[in-house]
Length: 298
Image 1 (spheres, helix red, strand yellow):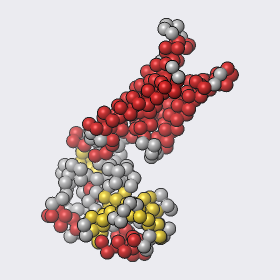
Image 2 (image 1 turned 90 degrees about the horizontal axis):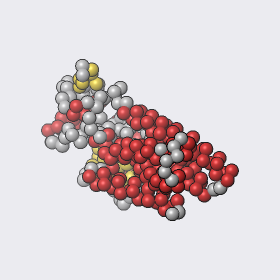
Image 3 (image 1 turned 90 degrees about the vertical axis):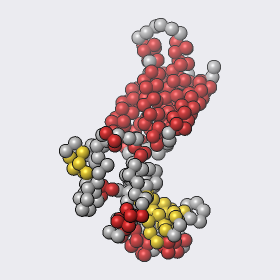
Image 4 (image 1 turned 120 degrees about the horizontal axis):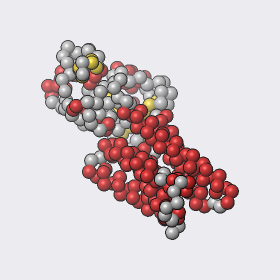
């Protein structure tokens, strides 16, 4: 059977496994699970090295066929988990190594003689490095203690507190005039962002994102992007970076008129980063800034 067919079988399997978990919950809650399954499958696929060097049991070609299917399945699960959008250096390292492993594996199947032996050595050397990078990536992502310990009721999926477009603040709809003109951000709009704790550089540009009620604010100097949406008679500003902004509102709802009035009467129009104003104690350690005269009690 053509090696590309076995690779395609692994890719289809990865898609089916991903869909099974995504349909049961959501992509954000599934990503970590997919990475774990992918890493385990890659570890099993690496067993092919034992057959070629140490163990003579079984037909070598049968081992190779299952190695190609399993390696393809594991690599595609890792790539789906990344959503092709690595955020930090250890994410990029695992992502690039996964692509290199896939590329050298395919190249080995297409070449012969000396070139094939050279590529095979590269492929065999990259495999354990990829597994180590995945383990490093997982450990780095789980280190949350410096900011907020994920214990007891806070032991939840990352996406619960880190939505893909966390709302930063809302503002009056009359600013839509400055958004519709596009181009470089106006001083009035820049001042409005600054009032809500979001600094924009003078090179920030505005463009229509989709339809007439969505705008994209791009601050290339600071490497930030914001989406502005029209919601009734207000404009809401959202952060596009998934893990750089957080919100407690998924579990702690603040949609009552009384709570909204309490916040807005103190000039707080963005409720997403609760710990910026509220302090809580977990395991005897204090988290958050005590700016308000009441405590945050989960």
